[in-house]
Image (cartoon, rainbow, N blue to C red; front, side, top):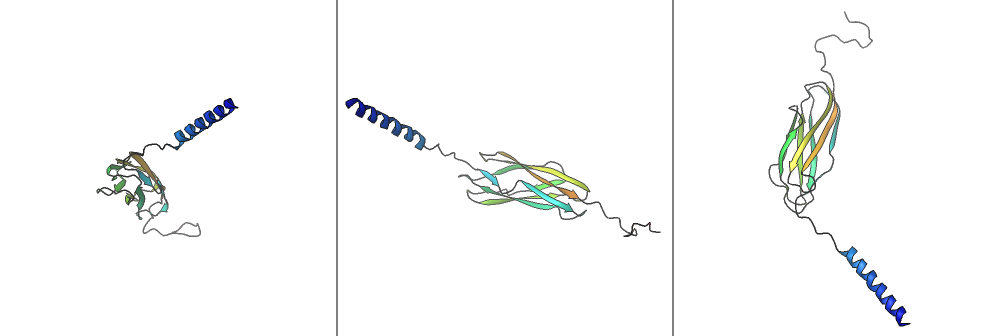
Length: 149
C-alpha cells in the first residue's frame, strides 16, 4: 500500500511539473510590428491618363513606435508617399502609391517598405491591373465595323 501511495504521489508531482512547463509564457518581444490590411491592390481596368492612386493601410501592432525608412517603387512609374513621423503602437498609417497611367498595358509593380519592425523589417506590397490604350483623338469611329471614309 505504501508503494502505491508513493507511486501515485510521484506521478502527480511529475504531471504537475509538466503542466508548469506548459504554463510558462514565451518572453514578449519588444519592438514595433507592421501589419498591412492588404498587401496587393488591383486597379482593374484604368483609362489611359486616369487616376493611378491607391492606398495601403497598415497598423503598428507592436509595443514601440514604428518608423518607416526607405520606401521605394520598383520603377520610376510607381511613386510611394509614406508618413515620416513615427507611428505609435496601436495606431495606423497610410502608404499612398501613384502609378503613371500614361503608358498602356499591364500593371505588375511593387513597393518595398523598409522599417524598424521586428516581424517584417522589409515588406513588399504589390499593385496590378491594366491601363487601357490611349484613345485615338479626332479620328472617326465606326460602331458597325465598316470602314469610315
